[in-house]
Image 1 (cartoon, rainbow, N blue to C red):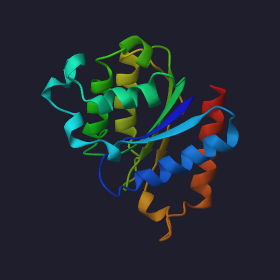
Image 2: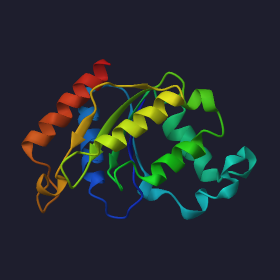
Image 3: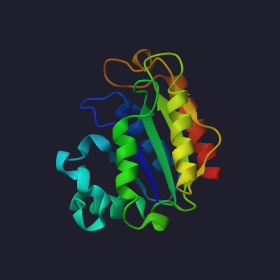
Length: 179
C-alpha cells in the first residue's frame, strides 16, 4: 500500500490539489492500493498534551495509524511551506503516531517528498527538515524530492494543474515507484 499525505490542516489549502493529483497519478501507474490522507480532516481533540501516552491517545489517531500508516510500504508527503519549513501539524502528527507501534509505523518505509510554495523555493527547507525527521525514525527517503514553486500560477480557476507540473509529478511518481 502507498499512502499520500496532504501535510497541512489549513482549510481550503492549495496543497491538496497537488496531493490529490499525485494520488491519481500513482493509482494510474501501480496495481498497489493507494490511499489519500488529508490532515485537514484531523479533529481538534485528537492532538492534546496526553497524546504521548498510548492509553490516552484519541481513537482517531489509532484508526488513522492502522488504516493509512502501519501497512503502507511507501508514503508520499505533500506539504506547503509554512514560515520557511514544514507545517507544525505534520510534525505533531508524526509525533502522535510515534507513540504506538513505533517500529512498525516507520522502520524501513520508503518516503517521497513534494514541497509546495507560493514563492520560489518550493519548500526546500521544509523538505530537508522532513527528510531529517524521517531518517531519524528509520524511514528511507527517496533522493529526488519535488519542490513546486509559485503554485498560484500553476493551477487554473477550475483547479486544474498545468501540463508541465503534471509531467513533473508523473516523472516523480515513476522514480518513486522504481525506488
